[in-house]
Length: 112
Length: 117
Image 1 (tube, rainbow over the protein chains, first blue to last red):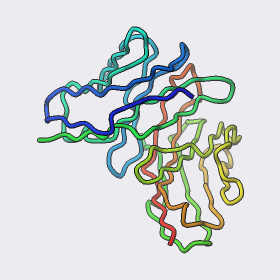
Image 2 (spheres, rainbow over the protein chains, first blue to last red; image 1 turned 90 degrees about the vertical axis):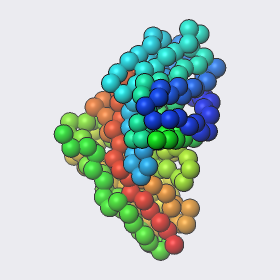
Image 3 (cartoon, helix red, strand yellow; image 1 turned 180 degrees about the vertical axis):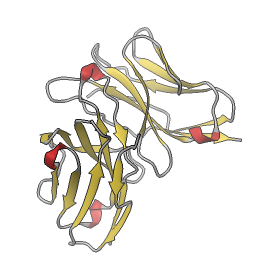
Image 4 (tube, chains in turn brown, purple; image 1 turned 120 degrees about the vertical axis):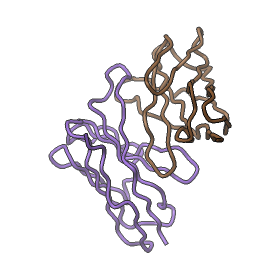
């Protein structure tokens, strides 16, 4: 399974945009890029996913580099509730595989 | 709509004792997953069910762990006997289907925090 590299931690101020980077230089053409986040004492929560094009939803935006070797999760206006561990995950489907493989993620702190 | 329900939320046992965790997935979700999350790490998949069938149990330590999903709805994960290293959070997740070209969203429960003394 292809690996992702994320910074261990990031800080942001409340109501400011946050850009969470993820490097995935060994991504293949069929790998989907998924983002999940995990708030304290909760299970992970789906945020967004994409394949090639940039994606937007009510929670965030996902910007994917043209060569797909990196991507950025964008929270347009951070709130205190966005403080969580953010996981960038590549999913490759082949036969019976394609599971989510979580790394250590980026711990985001949001300061008031 | 109710989310994934897990019980108990916390469990403390002595080593060598058995323990069981219960999961009720979101209604209509065919795929159910059990994950284990050690402190400071991301979750790791233990087993995936498609309806009643365990289709990926390659990461399940079969000497002491077992799981079942009777009738393709609720699921139980059991450890017998528990060891100190089994202390972790056990997460259950479900999705409508599996695969779908990489678009299946997994919904996680709050987890069961197991402490083995």
